[in-house]
Length: 451
Image 1 (spheres, one colour):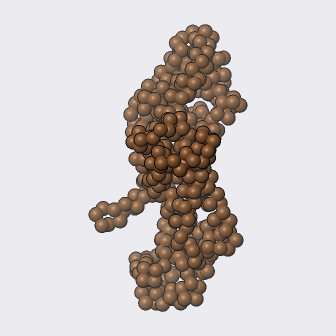
Image 2 (cartoon, rainbow, N blue to C red; image 1 turned 180 degrees about the vertical axis):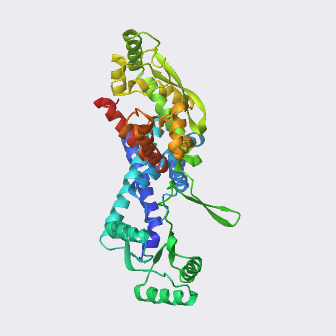
Image 3 (tube, rainbow, N blue to C red; image 1 turned 120 degrees about the horizontal axis):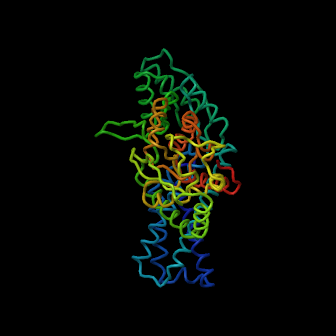
């Protein structure tokens, strides 16, 4: 632990080295010389890039010295930082007086961002390997004998790269005397040189919590109170406050963060516009085949429920006969006679979903999110699973985690089963997960495994 307090500064220095090395490589490629990097007329741009990265990085707290961060969370933070960094770079290009052309500025962004990500991930990997070999270790005392403390012990034993060594696990069950608890803890701290204390919050009463927290504060020990949320449907929590009173908000979801909503919207617009423009010849062919292989219009419009329960018209290439629901609302099935021959191919390759990129541009939908359903079926799902309403916190998507791993639902019971995947996405949202879902969706389209 001797140099552990400098990890934030070292990580920052490594990232800045990567950024400037990336810019050097871009200038070398463009001008066949390193001199452009040092040129006085480019100095403002070079310094501005460094400042832009620092603002974006600190805005996403990627230098917070937190050990218990999964690798996918690190990747997600870097993706969020990259989006904010892009905004700052183009804002910089409009403010700074530079002779560099816009294309070179674009290359500079990608060159610096990619090298920073490489250096950052490399540093994290080296640090994890360093800790796995018994270096930069924190000695940990676990208080509790329930399943929460058992899981902590198992996690710290299995994930050596966190750098936690358990010196003892004990329980204060039945013990409430303030001085007795403090004296017992002092003996353990003196004997084992404990750095952190982890407590199963459910096993402590008010007197024990006060005694332990008071001891940790007086002796400069990091205290972590681990609650048990196993019985709750909400996994995400956020610590806030009302005046000076701390408040733990259990219903908070990652997607409710303002920055994440804005960044996701920017990505949706750029991605949808790019797809609609670049693949327009394919859409024209699909549309023509739709109207020539069966009677009826090219597009199919249907009312669906979107974010916050707002109704909107979803648009798809028509894959069924025009009289498909003359007997009322029905869900499709594998051998549905209402689906046309061309419609079956479109559904397997997901080509019928293409017009929904227009819904995304309108703001009704997102690229990735829970699939929008009709109000008729939602009312039935809510009777059995009231927490379905949580999905209305975000915009529905063209594709989803449930769509990839479960597929289309043929009845309300299957809709309820698919709900598990959609809630998993809601609770664990990240841009890394979005890219994963998009990749898996493309694989489904290529392999024709949709239904």
